[in-house]
Structures are given as structure tokens and as C-alpha cells.
Length: 180
Image 1 (cartoon, rainbow, N blue to C red):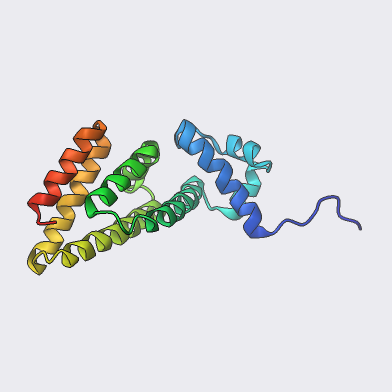
Image 2 (cartoon, rainbow, N blue to C red):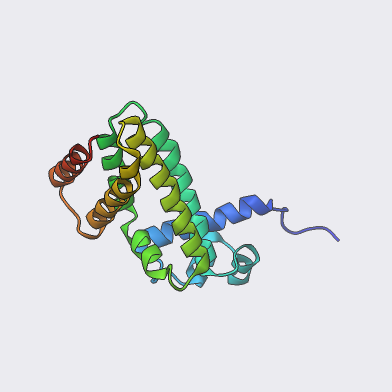
């Protein structure tokens, strides 16, 4: 029997669904985006989404992975900048996705896949901060608490938005105080 539709590569279809969900989650928020709307935007049925993702949280992880991969590619180009400028860039990048940041933080206690993603995200960025602190010859005993302090300040800046000059002043002071 002839096919009425062209066969679609599984990875391509998954990517189309993630792309549609990304746009809706960023613009309208996770909580205000029903799966049916994502399906319509992706040109599939809601059931099709469940062939690729176990639930809405797994789809959110797919979106977060895509956003993070894109951000890491752009971050790699910042290698020549100071740590201060790189941290400021991270804060500004995360601010673009403030709704998703809030969603991840609010759902880690009820979603094991989001909790795992969040822990891996933190681990990656904490390793980067620790490596930068070591490069700046911060004492080994101070690496972990200093890394956590930097993460806490970044997260506080996301929940309490600052203007550009305030963000810069906070990051500069923090890093100066920790010896970077």
C-alpha cells in the first residue's frame, strides 16, 4: 500500500516537537502551555508527543537540553573574557529564560527527571567555577564554599532582577572578595 506521508526521521520529529515547545514555554511559560497547544504548533497529535516524551516534564528537559546546548556553544566563544564578564553573561543568559528557571526550581521536588537535569546543570557550572577559582589560585579548602557562594549570588540575582550596572557591581565585588 502506498504511503500518504513521507517517512520522518525520529530525531527530526523529536526536534520539531522540542522546538515548538521551546517557543511556547519561553513565551507563555510551562504552566500556561498545554500539551495540545504544543502538538498543534509542532503539527502533530498530542499522542505523538507521548511517543517521544513520557510526560510534559520530560519534554521540558528536552527543551532545557536544547537551550543549554545552544548557550554552551555561545559561551565557548567567551574564553578570552574575564571571569567577571563570563559570569555576567551567564546571569544575562539565564534571565532570558527566567520563567523556565523558576519552573525548574519549583518542580525539582515533584519531578525526578527535572531534579536530575537541575543537578547535572549545577554540577557542570560548579565545575567551571571551581576550575576558574583554581586557575586564580584560590585555596583548595575555599573552592567548594566559594563556588556555592557564587552560585547562590547568581540565583539571587535571577529572583531579584538588577539593572546592568548593579549586576556588574555585584559580580565584580563578589569575585574581588573571593580573590578572582
